[in-house]
Length: 259
Image 1 (tube, one colour):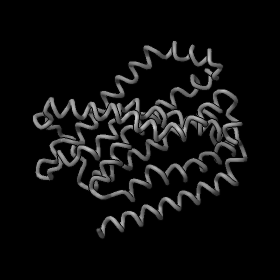
Image 2 (image 1 turned 30 degrees about the vertical axis):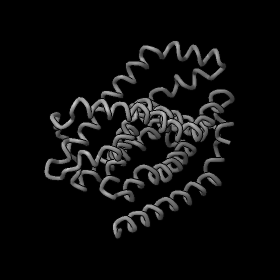
Image 3 (image 1 turned 180 degrees about the vertical axis):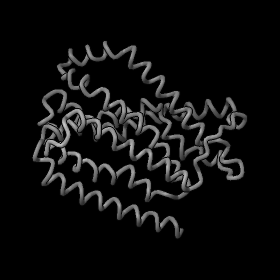
Image 4 (image 1 turned 45 degrees about the vertical axis):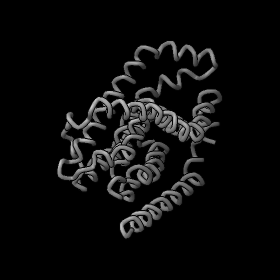
């Protein structure tokens, strides 16, 4: 229990630090430009909402099925490598579907009186953040399989709380333009992903070699079914906290979303 207590204590400290930084930013920094803050929240919310679909529920497999694969001598039978390949295949399917249905989807949004230009103008940045989050979520959950939750919370939570107000102030000071602001915004989860790759490697658990013989067709189907149901559970945990930001920004304006 010692390592669990230490990890929870460290993570609590990191979480409360993030809360303090977030509170200061919300009170004194973000009100300086509500439109830009509202735009940033729209991009982040849209990406987070799409993660369960883009990853086809892969994040729900990490902890649930790790005990079946756990074997340090065999490098856990290629479990992490399988998850990353699954995520890559899921992203390919997702972007294929986007390519096919993007136009009718935007037409539907226009019919429902959404701001279609808002989605089109930020498509690149939403897509980048989405891809980085799919992989970083896998690595963060995988690190928890080894009772490590403190350092991952720095890359998944604290990093954004620190970086976003810094980038925001750079934009207000005209050191970066709007395109660069959104590009750096997409770069925050990329830095988090690089940090997670380093940390899992530092733990000695970055095993990418696959072991196809261990993943039987029966186990594969079972995991696939679980992942598809996991999309719904992940969406249920994300939708209530993101849908308001998306709808306010796209049906009213980004300034109102900032408020």
